[in-house]
Every structure is written in structure tokens, then in C-alpha cells.
Length: 417
Ligand code: FAD
Ligand code: PYC
Image (cartoon, rainbow, N blue to C red; front, top):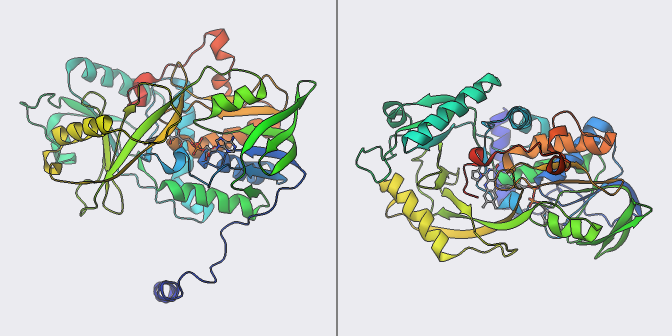
């Protein structure tokens, strides 16, 4: 009965040209003041709004986005989700996030297409293999699933991968996190937006924040292209532009902004049912539900805010892809793009209070924050609501850059930077 209803509903919607569809969220004019304003309508900002409303009962909240929801890194990333990080602090926060992913479609009543197809990290030399073993041991000690595959097991798991011993960089082994995988990036933003809106959060798009009003060391509100909006608390979740926003608030962050490029191929029939990452040959690749191969590069070497690709990086990605998967040698590129990632010196994020009272930042996720979206929003909501970090994000405060307690996760990033 349910299936028949779905077919009729699909046919009806296909024929009515999307007319009379209910809006998934409202587009209200901003109020003069909110309890909390969240700057940035990416996945992390929207998740923060959702959990503020749901977990803390704080609903007098606005999310202010300069463009459209998910138009930043959320809609530009290669959607890899995993929790196989080296240090205990990272393992805890990324695993918390992965557990939230596992129930997210049900939680939001919105299909975020989370697919636990496994994620394999390849080792191409003895040093990498030893390093993978060390990491797997650390990851397993934290109770997170991870295993080592030998070449025969890799061939069985991913038959189209070139495992020839005569390859330029032969595959010697791999780590596998079976609970890792991919999700539909836009859907994550839309699901959180819908959930937040239904709890009373105002989502305000096409509204750029141009300044902060601060008096006596405390934030009073934000200047925007739609006028001044008062706020008791402001949470800045503006990946790619966190340094700019900190500058507007009068302080500096240990952050550098770089483009990170990605591309997709023309769609083909299902041929790759897992995610493969190779830090040495340097490419990461999965196949989307539409059939496109989704692949990415290392960060561009220079600082920039330009969200465009460049032929050299595209060429490197394709060389690496074909080296690992000769079967793709005649596949054509469909489109390519870049996002701007904020990187910290230790490749870990900054989540917490800032030198201005009532101002909180969540940034520095670099090349790896998509996987953290639910967990990041969850801890950020706690931090803003309680005016103190949750134990999960306490190690990721700004003060670690003066205390020296850095959490170096360059090796876990899997993306060169
Ligand atoms: P965003 O989605 O960028 O949201 C920030 C928002 O702030 C933007 O929408 C922006 O418009 C808005 N904003 C900025 N300034 C202002 C302002 N002044 N006023 C109002 N709004 C403003 N991570 C993974 O875990 N797995 C991956 O496979 C992966 N692949 C990636 C591939 C690429 C090519 C890129 C670029 C990134 C990748 N990442 C990956 C990283 C990941 O995309 C980000 O860490 C994550 O999406 C950050 O989410 P966010 O919500 O914080 O940021
Ligand atoms: O963090 O897993 C990751 C990732 C893969 C590609 C870009 N980031």
C-alpha cells in the first residue's frame, strides 16, 4: 500500500512541474534581535542551529548566509565520511559524529543518503604500511572499527584497482574502515535546514555579515547587507572565510585559507562500490549514486579565495586516477570546481569561545570537516548554549596554540597539505 502511494505521489509530482510544493523552510525577514545568530549556512552552521533548538530548547535563533544554503564547502566536497583518526581527542569527536551519521536520516526524517560502503587507504611503500599498522592499532584501541588488508584481500574487495607489482607505486596493503563511506552533501544541509526551520529557527539567505558590533568586550550583534541584527550570542561557522571574520571582530586566528579542488566524471554504470584514498599517488575516489566518479586533489599551494579549478591540478588528479584504475582511462571529465578550506597548523579544527564575550568560532576543519558535520554542530550547540565547551571539543580550543597542546592530524587527513 505504501509503495503504491509512493509511485502515485512520484507520478503526480513529476507531472505538476513542482508547483504547489511546500517550501522546505521559510524565508523570513530578519528580526531586530535574536538570542543566537549563527553566521554561515553550511552543514555545520545549520546543524548547530538544529541542535540548539532540539537539544537545548533555544529557538530564537537565526542562521545568516551570504549566498545559498550549502553553497560553500558543504556543496563542494567529495563527501567522504570516516572516523579513523590517530589521536584520542580526534577519535572521540569524529566517532561521535559517525554515530550521529548512522541515525541521521531517521533523526531528520530526510534521506541524507549515508552509504557505509567502506573506505580504504592504500599504502605504496614499507614506510606507509608500517604507519598504517600504527594507526590501525591506535584507532582500534579507541574502539573504532579499522583493519589492515593484504594485497589479496584488497583485490577481492576492489577488483578494478590496479594491484600489479610492476605498477610505478605498487599497492602493498591498505587500511579499511567498513563503517566509513559517503553521504549526499546537499541533503545534509537541506535536512538540517528543514529540521531547524520546523523548530522556529529563521534561515536568512543572501545576507552577508560585514561586521560585528562589540562594546565593552562583548558582542552586541552583526552588521549585514540586510541591516543590523542584534544578538546575545554569535556563532561564526564560516569555513573558508574564518580569518576574514576574525579580522572583522578584531583578532587573528592561526588559519590559512587555500583552494581545494575536485572534479566529477561523466556518469557510468556502477563499477566502484567503496571509497579509495591514496595519499602517495594522491587521489581519492568514489562513485556517486548518479554514477559519476567523484575525485579530489591536495590543496593548492597558495592562499586564495577563488573557488575555481586549474588545469595542472586536474591533470595530476587524472594521472593518479588512471595509474590506480587503468579501467577509467577513457572516461571524460564532466565538471570541476574548488572550495576554500581553512587549515590550522596542526590540521585540527578550532571550536569554542573567542577573545570577545558571546562570540564563538567553529572553523579550521581544513580538508576534512564534512564527515564532522553532525558532531561539530552538536558540540557547537552545547558550547553556545552553556557558554563552555563540551568535553568532546574542549581539546580543540584556541588556547592550544599558546599552551602547545596541538593535535597533529596531518597524517589522518589523507589529503596533502
Ligand atoms: P561551509 O559549507 O563552507 O559553510 C560556510 C558558509 O559560510 C558558506 O556557505 C559561506 O557562504 C558562509 N559565509 C562565509 N562568509 C560569510 C559572511 N561574511 N556572511 C554570511 N555567510 C558567510 N571533508 C570531508 O570530511 N570529506 C571529504 O571528502 C571532503 N572533501 C572535500 C573536497 C573539497 C573539494 C573541499 C573544498 C572540501 C572537502 N572537505 C571534505 C572539507 C569539508 O567540505 C568542509 O570541512 C566542511 O564542508 C565545512 O563545512 P561548513 O559548514 O563549516 O562550511
Ligand atoms: O577528510 O576524508 C577526508 C577527505 C577526503 C577527501 C577530502 N577530505
